[in-house]
Image 1 (cartoon, helix red, strand yellow):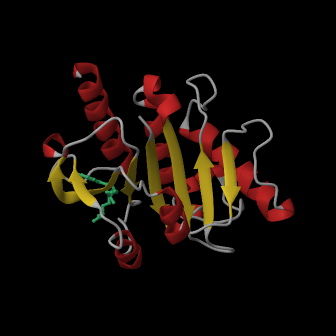
Image 2 (cartoon, helix red, strand yellow):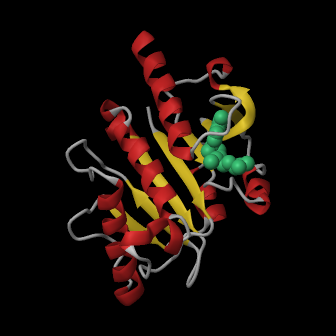
Length: 204
Ligand SMILES: C[S@@+](CC[C@H](N)C(=O)[O-])C[C@H]1O[C@@H](n2cnc3c(N)ncnc32)[C@H](O)[C@@H]1O
């Protein structure tokens, strides 16, 4: 199984000039990125080696920027939202200053100059599933899923996916998938999805 989570963060700053004591108010909602990241790798630790995470930062001063997190083990991953914010602040500052793309102490975290369309083009599974997590989607339990195939899961930040990015997504064969009729936090939606997939895997 190979799962890719792609979070669109169109307001997230592309430098590290936000305040750690007020991440939600000064970073363009990097706190949302940190929470989705933690849910991706912490909800089902046994799935870590099958997962990779992307976020696309579209905020000032130099958008877009791709964050990639991969090759994670339960031990090689930060514990908290604060840890994630500190790692991402250092990584963004380093990239702005010297274009260094990888974090020295956390090589699982890297940046690249890529936007939503480019990432989707590169990562979309040719013979797998492309899921768009959205409240109006088909219930996840009714959505067929093959663990043999690569799967990409796209989700939006606290304001959802912008219309122009939805248009890019719909250029591909995408399935809208819901984890309930209520609008949840992105981090909760990812956790529910991973728990559902893990229970199907255990039952198979
Ligand atoms: C806080 S929600 C965004 C809510 C925003 N008001 C909207 O209308 O898109 C963040 C993201 O979590 C995902 N999400 C939230 N609730 C969901 C649900 N019940 N089913 C599937 N995805 C969900 C969607 O990808 C959404 O873009």
